[in-house]
Image 1 (cartoon, helix red, strand yellow):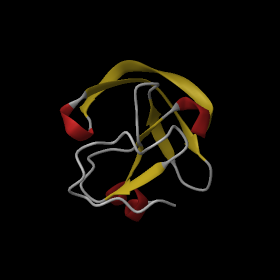
Image 2 (cartoon, rainbow, N blue to C red):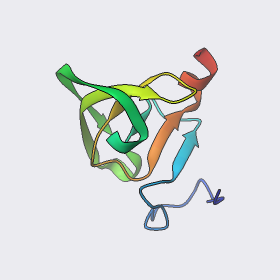
Image 3 (cartoon, rainbow, N blue to C red):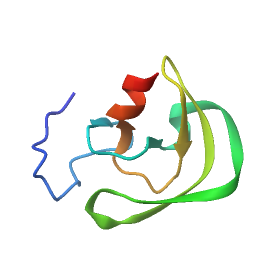
Length: 88
């Protein structure tokens, strides 16, 4: 796993398979290929991502060994909220 300084503002070093455990993320959001039992959500979820990019998640599913997370093709890096991980 790569270690990237939290002050890093350029995320071009992340690829589609990296998963960032983030202590300030409001929610977990990953690309759909990480999850199974994918479902379309009734109302799309919009979240401001890292660097201020607005992300839209229209799917959710189960991340193996964890819990249900939101999914979006737009996510880079994939983010797992530390608060979600602690709660589950």
